[in-house]
Amino acid sequence: MNGLPEGYTLKRSKRKTLAVEVTRTGEVIVRAPSHMPAYEILHFLSAHQEWISSHVALQKQRNMAYPAPGSREEAQLKVRAKEHIPPRVAYYADAMGLAPASVKITSAKTRFGSCSAKNALCFSWRLMQYPMEAVDYVVVHELAHIVHKNHGREFYALIESVLPDYRLRRELLKKIPEGEECHAECKGF
Image (cartoon, rainbow, N blue to C red; front, side, top):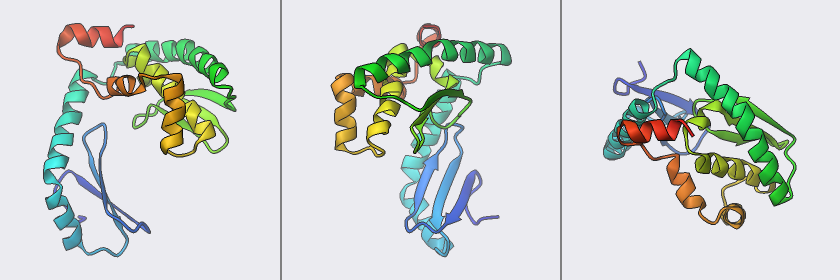
């Protein structure tokens, strides 16, 4: 037992600060310094309980709106990702004057895309459950990491130079569809 309420996972490391994360599955992960007393961690969680509760509820809503696909749907999403994402990467890489080392489609559950230190791009097939505008945002976001390995001002300025409406596109990744009509529309572009 880690001394935390049920449903919480404690991960200690050499970090200096406390952090709490609510995963897409609704799990609450608490990251704490190795030697921090349990009472400090519990006080932190108590102070952030409203935020934690609201984000757990949000993830439950997301999971209902975007249930885990069955094996057949998963296979279809993987095929669509392999067909749609690499051409979008090529298009935007050309427009931005960039060249990723490689492009892979993965089964990542916690992030839609990533850019390695060697500029290899990875995209989760789960991204195909969202509108193409959101897919393009993730593509441009990861391409921008080839130039800027952080999320600073210059990073977002580069994204905005390519996608002036990137904020709206990013919100599509957070939006929970309401009703079956929107759900079907968001999954079947």
